[in-house]
View 1: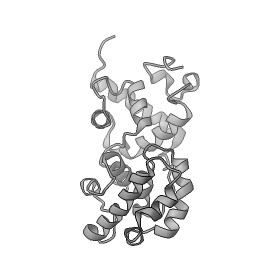
View 2: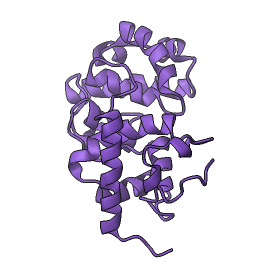
View 3: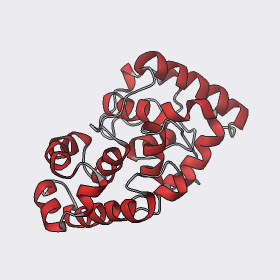
View 4: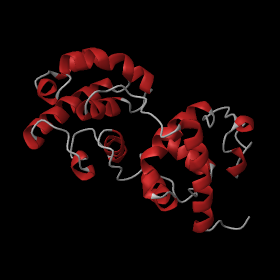
Length: 220
């Protein structure tokens, strides 16, 4: 099979986005939050666990420690007690308290609206920073590559074998999708990954972009 040109990938990606938008619209965040700080906390908590599980603990967490000022004064043990049902809760609790303290010390109690400064917060990497910029500040600086986006990008062959990390996959997707769609891709693909392009037993026969997928049927 001949190697697909970048121009061809862009054409196919545009059709994929057209279908995604028609089915999901711009997409919606799966995490519950009220402020940029709360969204940042929720995304940190979502690592290695489901958004549904995070949404079960954040009402209690945000009732007690819903601002950087309150979280900065919490003990790690108090936060652990609330998020104990989530994976890696020891590390996450430690990061959240440190994150809040950094917000207070360096950013006036706010989460910075800057992708590089966001990554200076404990527990915040590129994916989390992208999520916050896209969702909380509506200023996408990239595409958040979680497990869904990584899987779908490779199944659609918009990313090739050499894009074997989230960062490399993001770099490819930023070349394929125009900037005005960056804010949609993660939200839409998360829903698409849960509904159709599942890790196991994907619904290839019902897929809304099946005719645009070079690997359709291979994963069933």
